[in-house]
Image (tube, rainbow, N blue to C red; front, side, top):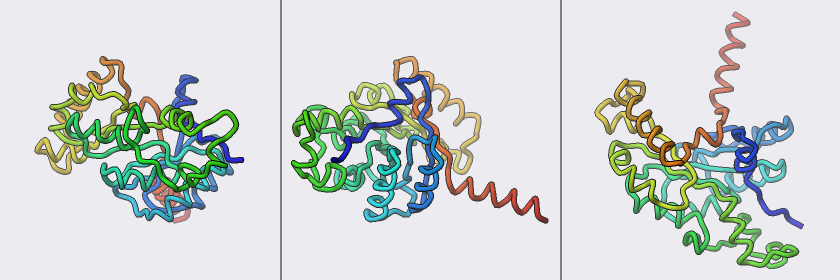
Length: 248
């Protein structure tokens, strides 16, 4: 019998710790298998906005992650419900919605990720909902509506603020229920502030710090409060550079 997916990031947060993961911008079932074999990691993050992922590769990676007890989260390429469903129906249980600038856009993100009554998520027939099989979904003591309630509890919904406009609307965005955390898009933010290619400009850094403090003052979380990930591409390059340095 299948096992209901639990969000390891939330579990680590309940222990007062951050979830530890790897981040991918290209498909690699092998990378997920390796860290699954190694142990100690909690999740896999797929960058669907800038990464090279097909529905088939997402499905394969989420399946491998499930096999090793790893949670799969993703930054989706867009906030259209049908796009988000392509990830949720594969078994992804954490979504980062990019380029959110208004409360209306934030609410639409929540609606796409959470089942009723917290949202308007569409029920699918993929592996994310165990192929819509009553035999698999109706586990002992769990009916369809209870499954939806549990899925909402385990769903991590994060809002990415990437422009000066999103910062201007932060109070309204913070009023949207169902958002678990907020994150930056520093390069895009710098560009919108008139500092293209300069994410480390003092004005950009100061504005992020100001909004971060505001978010915390409202009792809300940044994604960096909940989890941290090692980028596989950076790990490969760092190791390769060290190898070249050691052998030249």
